[in-house]
Length: 129
Length: 446
Image (tube, rainbow over the protein chains, first blue to last red):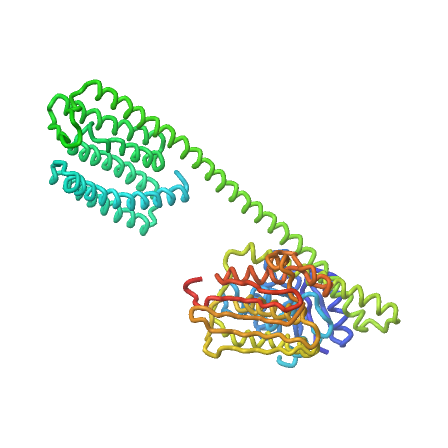
């Protein structure tokens, strides 16, 4: 089964997503910090990464997404960003490397996460990849 | 260094003074003509008219100088404006003294026109400068009187006006001088006192206004922090309850399902409220929002896509009319979409089943007018002015729909104001409501 890495510093959110994904028989690995997430990504080589924007520590999520994209192994790994930032700011975050608003992710998912929404988005991203 | 407001005020007063001076120039010519032609008094016309021309020329120069100050947005605008006012008043006094000397000196009742200049000086200048100008006026007056008295300066006697040559009557000179000098100083004293109090008051008001704005900002930052925290906890609760009610963790019995569903729904409502609060607070705090050209018809289409089903479910006839000549407009797409969504959703929400709701988007040249009309419950007259206030819900709205944050229309208003537009409503209870949103199309002006 495809392996999914969840990077989020909120253990309750992580647990709730994990339950949903595991019910669909996905392999789930989790990381509570950006650094740990990058390490796990290298070790576990996931098929998809769910990444929180981690506003509490600035915009750590942005940095993690950019760093992942710069690595050969994760250049094309789909990233699902867990944030309402897109709908709240109206920015499309496309941009280019080096831009302030460049966020190289494939899709966004607002919190709270609805189980069917998680499953649909994950399936869509995995099929695309 | 005086603040921006003080400088601006001074510049505006100087413009006012320039306008007054044009009237004075016209007055000099008019009075001279009247006095010589109608009253038949003999006046040295040429020097008087020369002074009139001189006033006109320096008034024009000062006007142009003022313009250049405003255009350059000079940082030392206050110093420049202050310098101009001092020079203007001194020149005015000198010219007035010249005119009076040429038309009878101390015998001319126009000597009391010096008082006008004293009042102007008191309004425009500092107290000290106003007293210096008063002293200059007194100096001009006394010099003229003394020099004319001793015959050093020629005395232009208004023979047809006064029977006696009063300029050599010491008692008259002493009397008029005492009254004149005391009036000049008293006028300056009184006018500067009043203008000082007024200046202090307006300064205090400006400070109080700034403090209020600062406090409002602090409050908003606090609200932002709190709502953000509340939202993340609520999101976690919702995320955890979701899989359970969805049956992912195993089947629930009826009671468990019902209670958890209730909990989920209430959290959802609270979340909706917190999100709205977060949105309006963020909008108040952020100074710049990213704007771009976007297609308004596409936005309207998106909104109808979402709300069309809602209207259909309630058997409400939703009519949409859009002027096809409207191209792209400048603004923040998601925010404008939010405004239309908000107003139209409200119309559907407060219109009973089987009613009618219409959205018409009209091209008004420089701007776009959106009109949302419904056949709903309407808004009571006393509630109408408050519907855009935060947390305000009309009395009949609360009765008919328990749900509602009371923030939707205030968010819409904030957004519209940000886009330099206008939003207003017309309504009669039980007769339906009409909401208007006027948005400018162009980017440069925003």
